[in-house]
Image (cartoon, rainbow, N blue to C red; front, side, top):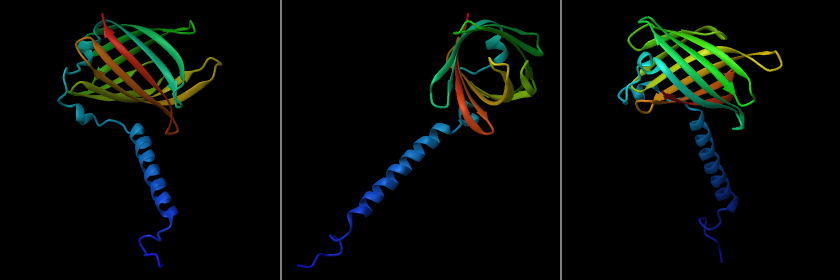
Amino acid sequence: MKKSAATSRPAPVEGNAMARLFLTALLATLGSGCANPDLRDFAGDEPALDLAAYFTGQSQAWGQFQDRFGKVRRRFVVDITGTWDGETLTLTEAFRYDDGATEQRIWRLHRTGANTWEGTADGVVGTASGEVAGNAFNWRYTFDLQTGDGKTLRLAFDDWMWRVDEDVLINRARVSKFGITVGEVLIFFRRK
C-alpha cells in the first residue's frame, strides 16, 4: 500500500518546527526582559512625581545590587536628607552596607524645564540628565564606582523611579559597561 504525501512527512520537520517555536519564544522572553519602559507610557499615571516635593525632608531607602546572573552582591540602607531652595534639590545620602562599610553621596539636582532635570554628585562623570512623566522619572548618567581593591569601574546607569503612593517610591537602575548589562540596582524609598 502506498503512503500518501501527508503521512510520509518526516518527523524531524515537526521536531524542527517545535524547536524553532521554542527558540523564538525563548528569545522573545529574553528580549522583553531587556526592554526599557517608554517614559510616555507613564504620562497620566498617579500619584504624580514631583522630585522636589517628594524628596524634601527625611526619607529612608533599602536596596541591593545584583549581578547580571541575579546573584545579590551587596545590600544597603540609605538615610536621605533632602532640601529644596527653589533652584537646587540637594540630597544628602548616608549609605550603610551589609558588610559594615559606609559612604556619603550628595546629589545636587537642578530643574532645567517643566519636566526635565540635571544632577551632579561625586563619582558622576559630567552631568546626569532626566525627565519626569506622571509618576515616573528616568535619568541616565555615567558613574565612576570605586571598588574595594582601589580600582575604578566606569559604569552607565539607566535609572528609573516610580512613585507608588504618598510615601513610597520604587527605583530600578540597569547598570552597564560598554553597552553590556552587568547588573541591576533595586531600591525602595519611604518618606518619614
